[in-house]
Image (cartoon, rainbow, N blue to C red; front, side, top):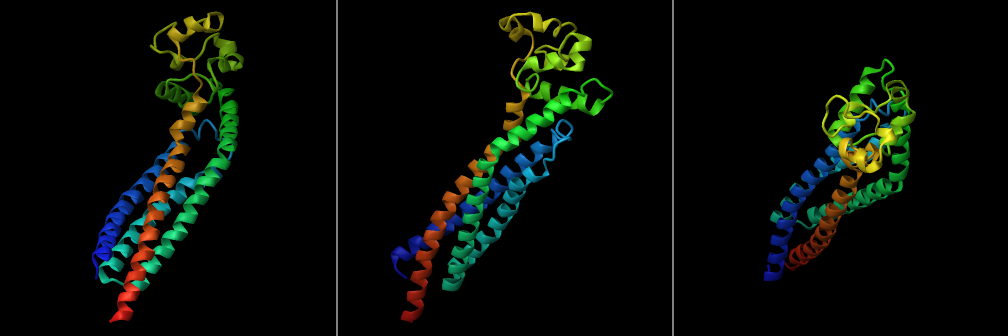
Length: 247
C-alpha cells in the first residue's frame, strides 16, 4: 500500500474522530433546542407546538447514528474493506441529505414558528393574574431569567387585565426587584423607563433561548465534515478495490 493510501487512511481516521465530536454536537444542539420548548409550554399551551419539535428530535437521532457510522468507518479502514467503505460512504450520503433537509425545514418554518409562539404568548399574557398561577409563574420566571418585559416590549402589558387593575407592569420586569419599581412606567419617558425595568420584549429572547439557530449551525458544520468524509471514503474504497484485484 502506497504512501498516499496510508495518508488517506490516517486522514479518514481523523475524520471519524471528528464524527464522534459531530455526533455529540448534533445531540447537544437537538437537546438544547428541544429543552427550550418545555420552558414556554405554559405560556403557549393554547397553540400546538408539537409539530415544531420534529427537527431537534431528528437531530438527536442522527447524532446517535453518527456514532455508529464512525465505528463502521474505523472498521472498514482497519480491514481495508472496499464493501465496508462504500457502505460507510452511502450511509454518510443519506445522513447528509437528511441534515440538509432539516436545515431547510428549520429555515422555511422559522417565521411560522415565531408567529405561533407570538400567538401563544398573546393569549397567555391576557390570563396573567386571573386565577392562573402557572401562567404567572412562567411569565415571572421568563422575564427575570431573560431580562425582558412583555412580548415585543413592555408596552404589551398596558392593555392587559393585570395592568388595568394594578396600573403597573409585573415586578418581574424590574431591573432591581423592589416595591414601586414598576409604578407609572407608562407615563414616563422611554429613557427613564429603561433605567428601572427591562424594556426589550421576551419573544426574541425566547426564540434565541429555544435556539433554532443551534439546529442550522450544528447541521451545517456536521454536513461539511460528512461531505469531506464521503470523498475520502470513496477514494479509499477505490484504492482497496484495486489492491484486492492486484493480489
